[in-house]
Image (tube, one colour):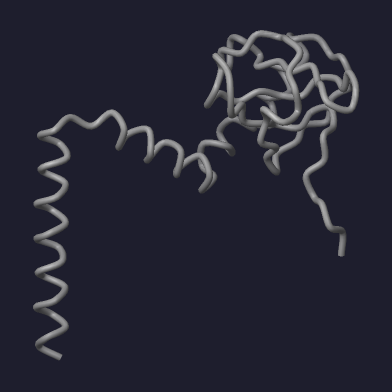
Amino acid sequence: MPMFTRFVQAGRLALITFGPCAGKMCTIVDIVNQKNVLVDGPESVTGVKRHMMPVKRLSLTDFRVKVRRGCREKTLRKILEKEEIMKKWTESSWAKKLQASKTRQNMTDFERFKLMVAKKRRSALVKKSLKKK
């Protein structure tokens, strides 16, 4: 069984983990050298412009599209739409966890309070039903 399954290769979908585009998705378009790659959103889909980025600022995903190295933005956008890669990404558990943490970060004090009360209620109901058995 191979040790690694996610390789740095053209067409690999990645999550940017550091910098001004942190938290956005991008696609590796070309490999510049061992430490840097050329990434593209495309901007109309993910909001990431084509630029060079260090590999250690990326988290590689399992998703990959078949594109040639250095493909144009228009070609990349068409392939992403055709294979519905962004839809598959949003349905993945990784993306759902990121969305949940983002939602929790943006909660107001009152929303946090309502969540606490709901958790207490649920806990009480669970304890009550387990006590009966």
